[in-house]
Length: 295
Image (cartoon, rainbow, N blue to C red; front, side, top):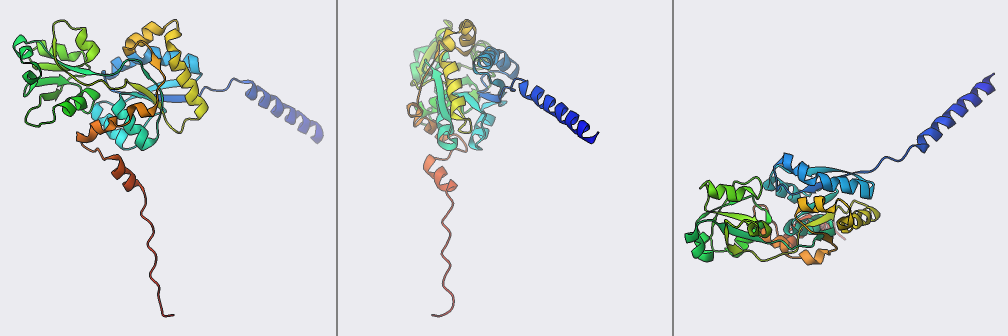
């Protein structure tokens, strides 16, 4: 009797184990962090097609994370925070790579550059000097456009007055025509699309926005995500996805292409140069105790 019960119980346990192991493995959940270049509700709309593509092409389940503003994005970056995968401009990536070991996966084929544009012909006629001392709309600091402006206008007495009053880049032209500012900072492609504005300053070009992965992510997983990004332009829904991201395709890249861009952050509160940061992270050697007693 006892033997029959034990066999029956063992059989039920074995059947239950086989049923569980027969279930498909749950997809790993990963977090994609992006820059706050749109209001939160619009961020979800812009990146929804990309998340759908990554989910079906990698087998992972991606969720989106974004800081409420660039100041918070920078604060989290300085604190060493970061998601599994991050999509951001090169100055942030270079900092993240050097301080937290993030590794590049792919970048936009387009470089990044920014323009200060105006609508007033009198200001435009003055060229670059026309914007000195005048109000310019922008997203919050330290977005890439903002730090590139101050990398170019280094004299504190001869700089535009950058106002972080835009929630997305496309707010800038509206603020000009509402007479709230005299100029606006825009990605170069957006300035070129607005014939009512005249660009009077253009930044230098730097390597484009880059996807990077946490060093905690296994190498095989990083390779799978990178491959999906590099093949995105071949997908039937590629136009919808890439149009939202304002890029034609993603290409392979290396961290060396971004080396030195973190120094654009040097005028930003909280920035610490790499050598000082490394020195602060290295524990001091233990002091040798002084001998006691007599020989």
